[in-house]
Amino acid sequence: MDYFIYYLEGEHPDIAIVEADSVETAIQQLKKFYRNVSPDLVKKIDCHRDGYADGIMIISEY
Image (tube, rainbow, N blue to C red; front, side, top):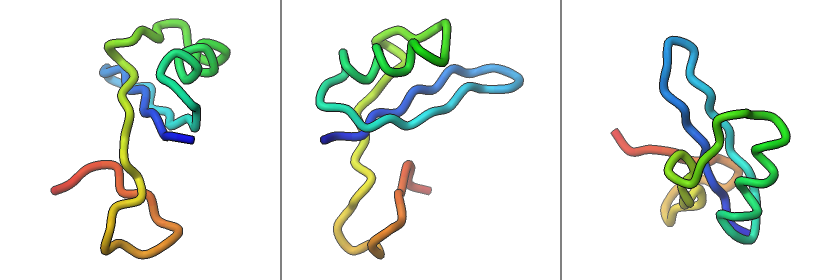
């Protein structure tokens, strides 16, 4: 399974990560909890990068 991130900007942003087999499935899962889910707000992410410790999810690089 892959990981997908949902991010909606704002003063109090909505951020969620979901495990799913496709972006369409991820969107359906996220729509159970969020109203404004659309394909442009959900992106596949690689949380298990080579060289990082097991058990940690790296979402972005600095």
